[in-house]
Image 1 (cartoon, one colour):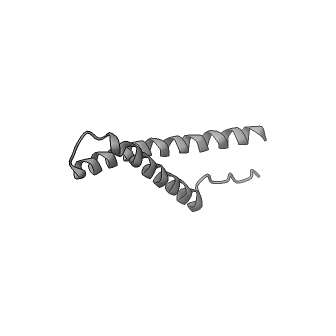
Image 2 (cartoon, helix red, strand yellow):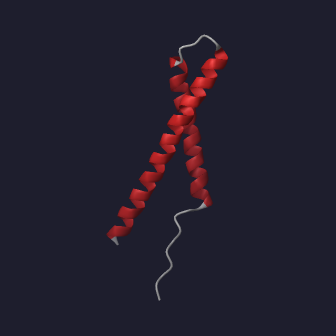
Image 3 (cartoon, one colour):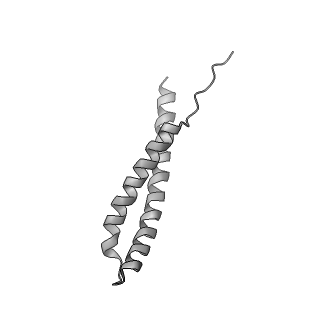
Length: 78
């Protein structure tokens, strides 16, 4: 009888990933906010937020890929 595989998803890991992504969003927004070429505060908030959102999505994808590769390498050592 084969041992059941452990599921890689857990609500705790989801919350940790969301918190890390939110922190990354704040950092990215703070970085790109000064680079928006406008004098209108609404446009600065809009384009800074959209840019930080895209960068946060890339961060989230990279974090998921890092977790998958780490899990794969850890399982292959056994």
